[in-house]
Length: 473
Image 1 (tube, rainbow, N blue to C red):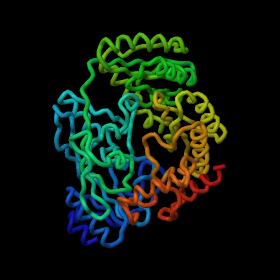
Image 2: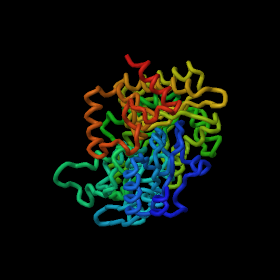
Image 3: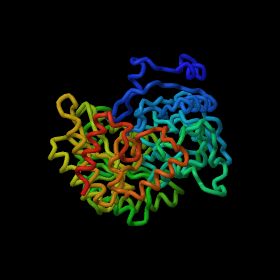
């Protein structure tokens, strides 16, 4: 502990039990206190902290804003949490090269604002973009509504400065898009803090589109909305974003934020297209026709930028609004083939009804990224039963040919379900990739891969392991 204080200063190191309380959880359910928390202020301090931990054989958990939903920053194995909260500089914005160089603690929305000031934009826009940071976005390969057209973080990260588990500082990629040799940047993006601590990121920026058009369509139920979304993609139009809200979410938003969404809607489809004015005009005509043909009872477009922003505000505040219904929730992140969305949603809603939970659906329907939210009260409804219903929802997604995660990551939440998707040889190959960076397994132990005892003392971890093994056939 003395060495950590020497490196970062007494005010940036925490070890008392009462100080560690706020560091023992993220936005999920898993909880475990770290042995200490340290907030370095420079890359050099990060490297010194990692070297000090390595010399003592201590594990490290990198942490951004703590908004993750997969337990990725839970301190298993008595780890030291290394927070990037003080690494908050936007180092440069190059308007000509369309590159931003930022530190990992910069909020996503701050990059968006800085890029817009020079006529550019940063595409990844998770719902948590006001508070989630670039380091965490890179670690989980975050996406957001506009990932439909522009892709997730892996499509927008050109380079990474990384402190390895030994304390060595290395750089992969940078200003040039294509470099010779193995491209390690896509491997690091989505690695969830298991290969090192990100201390600097080179981000790709894009020119602002000439025209943006945003439509909102009302449907009698969620199935008609899902079919309309598939029909738009099948027509050859790829919107910048396509989002859906169900009746439960609409009601919660109207009550919480007075956004005046149609209260009688069974589902609401938000469609946005971007491009040249000639393109967006043609797409707008096609989209409105397809929406009405597939059962939309009302279609309107945002007339002003302020109206467009209000619609997106409603979408991104949906998760917060649900707290008015129940104090606790379990948010999912599975991905399913878009054409199977109506059938999967029917099964997901049936699971919630069978278990007696209110369920809200708001999700990135364009790329099949589901976000069903089980709403409950932890004071009277045991978390183990909620997790059982959640495992059934994951199983439905996998059986439909889907994936465990679209943007939240695997972390501690879904690590034991990995063998539902990958065979032993697949998982072994992935482990070997990690071990090339972290042969001792001290960087974010217990995450991503199934098995292992690093987190075995966490009650929810035992429950998830039993569910994963018991439901797999």
